[in-house]
Length: 500
Image (cartoon, rainbow, N blue to C red; front, side, top):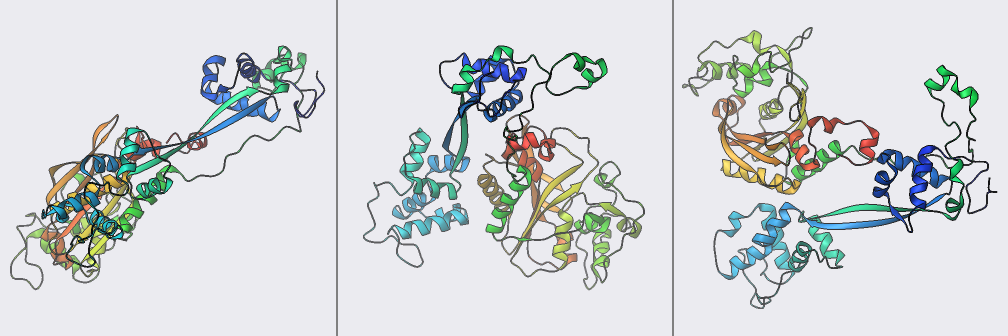
């Protein structure tokens, strides 16, 4: 065996495992550094076996590694839209120059505010309202700030203007992907190391060796007490909760306040307060998980009486006419008291509205729900939902669709398709779909305007748009998961390698 030097492995004698031998042979057979992703096929080992062997060879100073860090800038779906239709500031400037009206109403509030601020900073607009071009505004044929950068990114010729790229990233128009490529080569000691002797000695003992007694006739590889310990990566957030935090930041930025509710609810809050009939199929044992050994309690005050009157088609206490015909059946108090695992976060909306918030109000809640579902790639017994309400005069379905499109754009999940739908507690009702690359179009944006039978018993007199976004399915599209169960992955190796 060679005598160890500064360039040779850390201890002597030393042996190599068969896996280490196979990897070192591949590296020695090439004339230059070898990309890590090429080694598994050449050595007939799995990627995991190759990675482990390379780290052990590195700790023995038999190989060296060259790391190449790369950053790739690409357009988000929102950036692609801005490239084809023009940045918000470009569209607003062109509209002002042509004196075209209505452009402001066609823009999202955040786009409009950003466009006005940018044009003012660069000397295009007069201060104050209404919006007016300055007499000395720059000529219209020149490119606006960031337009050239956006175009070059789309063409693949990214300029070295990190400031512009950072601004585009903050606006959600581009995304920067960071990657590290590794290339491996044998060290000076690795080139001369006698690998022909490797693999002849016993490494870790196995159950089969102990049972058969084969270990008695073999010789053991020396244990290198001076070798470096195995690499342990640092902690990182689980992708699914981290993505939910990002989603919450978007909602908070849009002016929504957070609300919470209990996971164990009564049927009153889970369904009755939402004007869902007590014999609705979704409330059967096939959908809702009922609890035993727990006693439910009804709300105090007149709220219960008002909800019961709406269900039975009677006038609310203090009113002369009913809100509607109701559900033409007797409202059962025993059913209202039954405890269940919450099947929808719309129950949180009911509790929030029962506090009679002062309009205008915006509320969201992201939490878990439970239903008796057959588990498949897009269904699970536990699922996350983002509940939201927006209450103020003048709210319509158009505002709701705009919110869905803004969320999808901010999250980079692509196009939203909307169609009419039906829910017992909203009218009109819609469903928004986004496309998963493998599973196709999935419903993630159900919503509508709460019916008077929901709002009036709660004391709400303004229109309220509501939704219950399938946050788990939406995360599948955003994170590139093909199975909803991957979002609950607890395999550290999978998480460490960023496979979700």
